[in-house]
Length: 578
Image 1 (cartoon, rainbow, N blue to C red):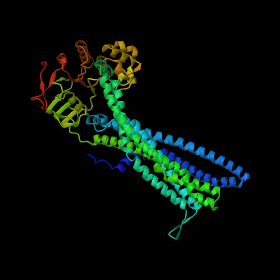
Image 2: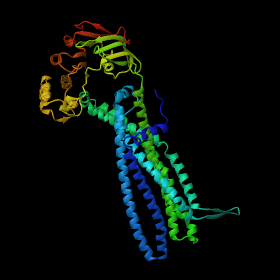
Image 3: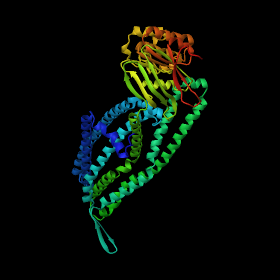
Image 4: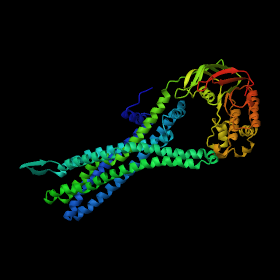
């Protein structure tokens, strides 16, 4: 297993790929344009700073022609500033969406590859992956751009106004113990001291926000997941009259969310007190410091206003950390969550498989010394070997919890826990029908055709298979969109799965309790339909009812010698005893 990346490396692994990808030319051209617009905004700010001196000197000297000319100058400077600011925001939003789209596609592909979505849930190594892909990627791209561009703008502003502030503020002379001390460009040193003390104060007050923000995202996602679970299982909850228990669980999750939010509020309140005091006092602070030179006649009002403006720009640039602290805390929490998600998916991709898969051509399925385990290492099945020939129909039986369904997952390649080898004919088309069939949201045509495209089958094929599977009453809803997993009963869903199998016409078909919700008559009909429509299919069925034994030729029986010991699998003749 790879060692976890450091914080800096984790951030770099998240941010770098987009900027060296196939999108790099468009991304860099947009970014360079945005940077150019940001530099243009700083240039206009420098011009407005110089305008301050001329304008306020004209006011003090009551020079109307200069006053009028400066109004016109401010007008075109303001218009240019507005155009630059508008297009900077517009292009930044566009670049953010390009970046987010690219990262979303990559994260979704990575999450879906090698069934990582399945294994991360099985191993409980990452919470709420949907929220991390949907929301955290949005926060990462938005805040990475806004914070980095804000930092760049602050640095350029700082370097642009440092020289101005140095020259316009002039020296400050004072006496200490009979010694005359002169500080050149004294306003610059006041700005550095003011911003430095403010940054230290804000960091000390707000540092818990990173941890609290991380937790808040998780608690919000957990609460939302609880609400979604009620929607997904509304029928069962209603039958159990489980509303009080669900309300209790939701209230518990919300109480956790609320307690963490109150902690955020308390920290944010202290942070706002410090930052608002800092920003409000910064308005009058340069005027107080420059006032002695103004009243002594060393500078005019225009000079004083230029000093105040330059001080504000330098102080604002130096205060980037203070102004962006809340966004930095949110960004850092988001980076931590995405880095954890990335590491968890990488762990799944690089984990060593205990059960080895190999391509097979002589037989459709060979189990060679196969043993099964749970993710925590508990043994389910002792080493067993079996061979399935083409056209064989095998019934898998045994007590509940002995590993029958896990065996099918291992054959499907999604259960790596155990040892031994599974040989599966890669040239043959395999189809697995679980007990609870997955039905995507969409039209009934799309649900029936899944996992293939609806266009792969004609109306005649779909209507015929619905009729054969006792779903004729659904024919008129073929092009109706709905959440069919809620509209169809469990029995209808299982018949829909059989209809998929007949449409797909696999070479190897695995049924995992696929008729558990059907009555005996309908169960017999479904198996008869399979035998008639797919006479050459190799069939493996997991079932508890003996009524389906007659549709199979042999039996793989799971048995446990003792309680809490791993099961053993053996070939036995049919019919199966109860």
